[in-house]
Length: 177
Image (cartoon, rainbow, N blue to C red; front, side, top):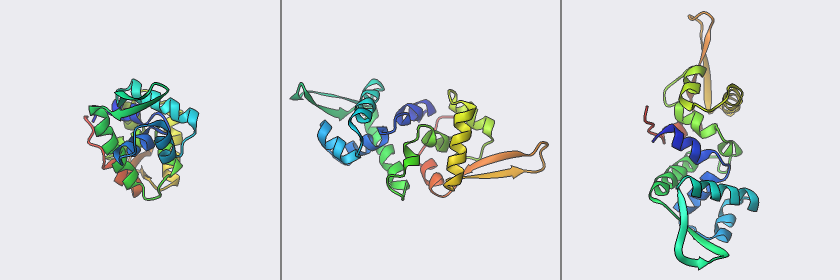
């Protein structure tokens, strides 16, 4: 899977819960999906629109009332929903808000092998230094990422590696490098 797809798939807070709900067999109408995810209406609608724009879900033609449409997964969406299910299964603290932060999953996806800050940034393209720094700090506080200093290098440089829950989530991805 390409890292750009991972970034698009996780850039809205409720994308993963919506995709997992589809994977779990929740009917593709708004009310059941809202109940299954626990999202607010506005955030849910924005996430749903984002998933439609990225080709992961589509309106189910011929089903539902025009004011109450039904949605279904596309071919790409089926793969994304399977990944969302694996991520939520790897996250043993179900519903952890850290999972819904926009750069958490892409950062963990790049940490299948230990990397320096610049290596992570190079793979994630559009991420800013500040966003990456904040994500790594939050992940380190939760022990999802371990930061090791290499004292032999001058100046000493940190190497980041996924650990614990972060490692289980990182192992879900097979990124094209």
